[in-house]
Length: 362
Image 1 (cartoon, helix red, strand yellow):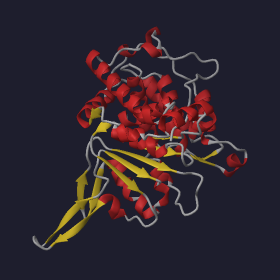
Image 2 (cartoon, rainbow, N blue to C red; image 1 turned 90 degrees about the horizontal axis):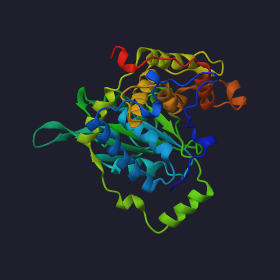
Image 3 (cartoon, helix red, strand yellow; image 1 turned 135 degrees about the vertical axis):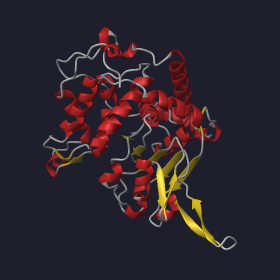
Image 4 (cartoon, rainbow, N blue to C red; image 1 turned 90 degrees about the vertical axis):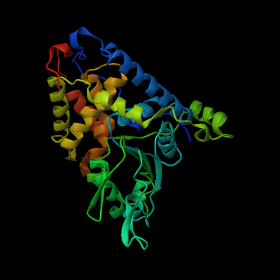
């Protein structure tokens, strides 16, 4: 299924500045025309991401912002939670992104009877050798698609905690490293809650970003009917990149510079979520790290080798909103976590920095 994001339901932030504050332009440069990462690296990153985005948008028509967040999460070495009502393309997004990369892909259908060993693997006794042999589970892949993750029990959900945070699996006191790169793309339906288990805060915090796709507008839905009613575009998707290339691009993103004042701005944004009266649980220090990593990826996609506050604004809602726990009063007032993050972005002063090349590089 395909659709177009509705601003009211997608939770995407447009990068607007706080009232009365000028955009952060290092050395007078426009954020849209920053310094290139490098002539070769910049071109390779943009061309690879362009091909992946075009591939995904063949399946998810009219969803550039959702695809952007997915690519940012991929480059930030994170995990993506796709949360929305049935039939809007959650699983299609996950499958399209996975098939666009020529690497190992596995899919797990989460159900109430799924066991942790069905995810991580199990040791089986071998009569010929007289010992136990480990049989890897579906989590041993570069891209792991977890469909309807909230339908499995908390015991099974917790099997992903070590995998997502440390990229390893421990079974019977033996630790096995997961493939690199490694990304979990999980989907869940927040409406049909009967027979489901809400993700605990500890697991939600391990997802770098959350996106909501939303219902399509009339034009996008008509295009979907015309293009997809008699043909499944997923069946024709071919890989446009591979694991080695993706690993190389991730290394480039790690080198994107973030100046001290921008780093402090990221810390201030996350700290501000812990002081809002409507919030019972604010964003964690892990959220700060994920915000900075996502901002680096956003800067790289924008063609720059340095981060500006606009990059933090572009990823703040997808990275922070799903980690916040609102108070009962906030729910009664129909306030959302997205509203709170946007209010924080408007309230925290934006730094006015100098040219990034004059600052000490990390």
